[in-house]
Image (cartoon, rainbow, N blue to C red):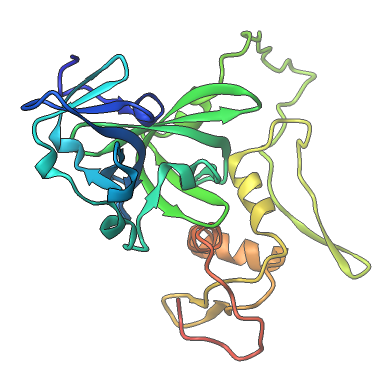
Length: 279
């Protein structure tokens, strides 16, 4: 058996036989991991040999060892009701996690999670993510929110999103000569064409930044929150369509991130004209 202090992958654990040390009996097989609102693995769901008895759960702290598809625990008496854990609506399972897309604070999409890698105390340190049929590991600091379609994470370190991408061939970067000028950083600007707003991006041949992806995700949606400046000026009302002028104002006031997190978390905005209390 491997030492207890190692990290565990839910992909490797799923389907493992759970064996009780004191008796040597097979207790059941591991079904899924159940994650609490703070982003830690709270339980491991186990299907027993006798299906009519119902499922049970195990705390990650009770794992003595895991190797070659076998998970060792000390006593089956430490297992608790699976249904009792699932009744907590704020909890979600790794099976539910796989149906969403991982997105970080900047709006960068990383793909669908295949597995969560966690420590013996339940802390999730990495996500195995499938993007364009390529599996890579994404180190995370925490899970911020889980919405109907997305899971928002804090990366372990700044710039980790780029480091987590599959390696690509190195490119030689040429410095601009006197006759060449470096392209300015991309910036969002609003312009009116008839009744529609368009985005003007300088240097649009360059790869998009995370902020541009975040703006593209938010644009045209209804704000789930009413947000004000410290002085009490209303920047946006709940239910109001998020247009470019509003997005620019949100960026100026440092409020864009709040709207982004609320949207990916599945907060439903009102569609009437009556302003709501501040979110």
